[in-house]
Length: 177
Image (cartoon, rainbow, N blue to C red; front, side, top):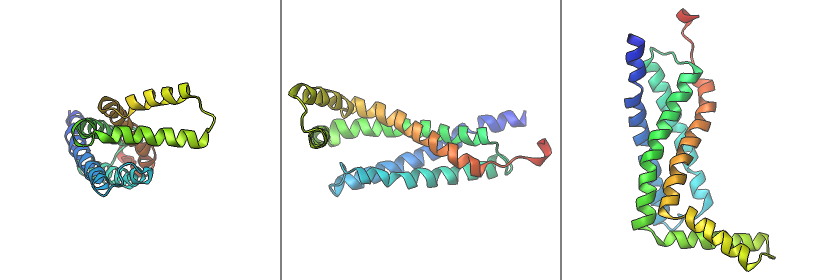
């Protein structure tokens, strides 16, 4: 019975850490947008230390405070992924609002950047191929496209990072061996 209570208790801390992670990512995104670096790829790479740091902190804190200092690999992975679900939901709503109301011009800028890069690496592209790319990336960088990409992207990143982090945060209870 006590184990079931602790299992159910995983949702609230995962939501709290998901909120913390998503707010940190939103602030980082807005800072880069405001300084004019919102479309640079390196700016998104700077979010990875946030993911890793908050996931490590939250999994260790959950292990030590909610699980008496012990957590299996699977539970650690599950907790990190659950944080990703909440982060994904919150950030996806932000991404939709951002691309729909705050910076709708970014959709055209991002599509143009993709076309320029494609023409640079493939100078023999036909008009039909460019039109195809414009259509695909226009949908991808739309508010709905960013909602979907953000939702599943954040869940996936938290899952992948948690796969690795859980190797180091797992701690078996010697009484259960």
